[in-house]
Length: 174
Image (tube, rainbow, N blue to C red):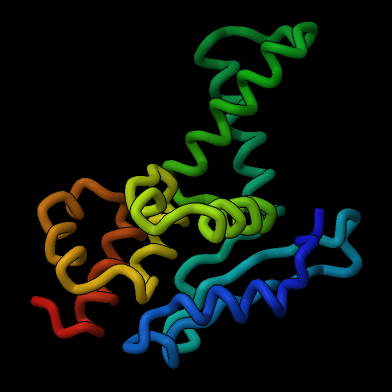
């Protein structure tokens, strides 16, 4: 599943949302593996040319398989006859991966679409790690909002905390 709106246009829009203090430091890249059966690859967020978050389809799908297997072992359920049961296991495994910040390239595109189509206030309330990271880089999130976030940022995933610290350092908020 390739990203249908042109990635170059989406990237320009995404970069236009990045705050001025980080615009020259943050970059978004999409790497497709042409010889892969589905031609998917990974999406990457870099800071100062260092990969901070890599959303690799192969890694995510492998981890999803292992999570499904572990859930089956815990439930002692090895029946493959129910489509509902298989789908429920997939959703549970995918939820675990999202909570850990393990994304596939198509998850990046899906979250990007949600981020572009939602008001920043709604995106800030999202439980999705990637959407929160995009919000923390967003110029529409001001210093006042960043200061308010300090109260509950310690409850967030470490990736979100790292991007919060990056933004606060860039904005000289201590």
